[in-house]
Length: 196
Image (cartoon, rainbow, N blue to C red; front, side, top):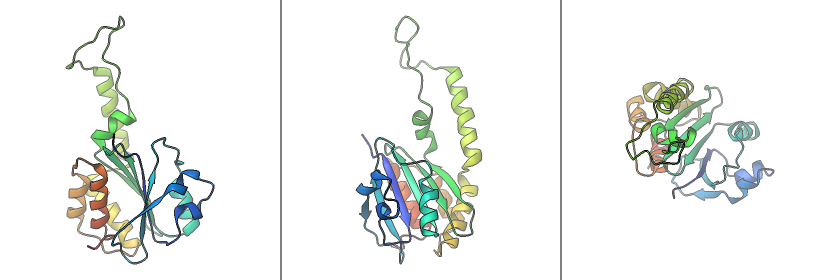
């Protein structure tokens, strides 16, 4: 079983649990060593039950009034990255979206009405069509590739960081790793959060 949880990236020495004490899951946040750019911290919040609120980004941003970035990891298979800046538009992107689809839209069981197994190669055209429709909707709201990279780069500059080129960021957004959180940490590096 992979990692379920959220990386909280912000420019503050105060732990997330002190900022939002009402969110009990944040009490277990662990600082992840850097080196990080001056003033920035990365916290890891284990959350296998998915108890963190959907508006965690907005709550943190309201408290600190500074750029915040979250990476919500799904079983080490995919990461949903969301970020809010000072003047840059909020943005989001998926790392390894195809690997996330089974979690976002669970597939039907491969059995017929009588409980007979339909085989390893059985496919449900209606389900596959729904996956493509959902995938398109997600990408319309959280585009990857060059569009996502441009938004990420704008956020990083707004946050006072020195990001890599759009092409370098795009290669991460389009990349694949066995553990999706490794791809997320590489994205942090490309955004200038980890200059090492």
